[in-house]
Length: 262
Image (cartoon, rainbow, N blue to C red):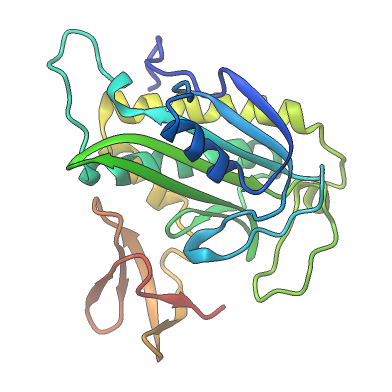
């Protein structure tokens, strides 16, 4: 159940940008120059160097997709009548899970129940990639201080460059042209709900929901680990954010260990 009064509201203020190298790069710069307001959303019409996971480039036509980054200052996320919480790197997986579910909530409301989350935080519809999340965090010593949450969602684009990933957009799924500012407002609301649930209730209930939406759950998938190919059944993600798969026995993998051979 969502808290009645949010500790943080994501998407306020909204900073709209025309063309930028990357909303994450811009947002990180704002944080570094002490110009960022916690909860802010930086939205761009076009990114010249859009960032994906593991150094990949995000392919997007100008003005056709939802491209944005939210910033959160962790010291602001304090529940009333409790001791001040010191946020650490171990807490980061909880935010990642909450954001993944929030993005999934938003997309599922439009595209339906075939929406899922491909570990760790790609947005999928059936077997096609509809969006991605890149979270970059700032530490002061061992204290987690800021988080920059980059999100890219395919909205009105229908032609994509040749790539190993099969992309899909909301327009391709629904046949409709979508108003991106209205979609951004809906996304911000969905994220606000899930991030506040994480602050109040922790990772456990969110992890249950995440695993319900896990891409290829209980299905056999071909993987590549350090140039070794194998087939395993996708089981679940644990509280450390690791993927658990099963061959003859259960095995646990960190992000970056596996390549999905789809």
